Length: 439
Ligand SMILES: Cc1ncc(COP(=O)(O)O)c(C=O)c1O
Image (cartoon, rainbow, N blue to C red; front, top):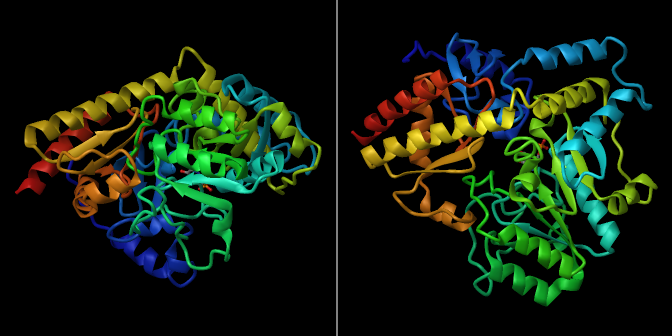
């Protein structure tokens, strides 16, 4: 499906945007789009359209939230109907209660819930709560895991890599200028999927560790699955040392299963954070945890606020999303996992035929593609050392020309609106692009 593929109108708008928006965009992640950030004006189901009239099968899906596809009728109707009666009461309303009950019915560790608007905020709340509950300061964060852009956690998410200390410990590296001095004093950075590293750090500093935060699947780096027993080992290590395990389910939540990665793997963390797929594109994040821990927020001992928290639109979207995910006739999670696996297998098959050096890994509903020439990727260092970002950038740009929109950072998201035809079309495009790249 080669298309006209001009970006002229987007280019003009982008140049105009440079005069009013810093960098022409509102999230630095969007700076990466090539040949420059594009402007879109319509999205429905699995398709998105740019202002130059190009149509794409979309695997970016708003960076993950659009689990039902773009502009789902049931969600738009729920939000529209609810919001005509008021948008923000600065007081309680029935929808927030119903949304919380619906989250509780799906998420194993959700004895109590708090809503906010972004994943970054939910992670901040989890950190404060963990520190208050344990009366300790240090949080273990893994190299290559992204938990939002706040000072307390924006460390070691991108190359270049510095050498390890004692063959195990990465130096804390802030990922932006302007991160407050000493933010790293509340963190220990470790390599992920490494049993020895976690054992060593708990042996040495167990009584300082408030919490371990982990993406249960390392979606932000090549969709790396946890090694067998690793998440269980993290949970047991935390339990033994009276530390808390936090699952950052901002990507995995409501996606890999309706109860998130904690249901998928059968491991219940003490606290968990959700966002993206919680509300199909409306701004919602969720902190979940046990009554005992969450009651520190409930009693006001730990401050958690937010003017826009649980606004009517977000709660209508959350309630409606939870009901949709619970509907056994629809089976959203089964469907997106099956579609994703079909696409992964198709890509792996093309890769074997062409010996293209491509690695495809992940659970299905979300997965990652990179070029590694047969080398394994099991943690952040192996990703940086073994994958070829320049080759992937060519792949992304050629796929865009064929009407397939994929993320420049390697992660592919599926929605329930994707069809078998979309998958076939994507595989045909991938075959042509990989043949072209081999020339
Ligand atoms: C695992 C994870 N945690 C936290 C965040 C931050 O969420 P937000 O961008 O909503 O602040 C992200 C964003 O991509 C994420 O992938």
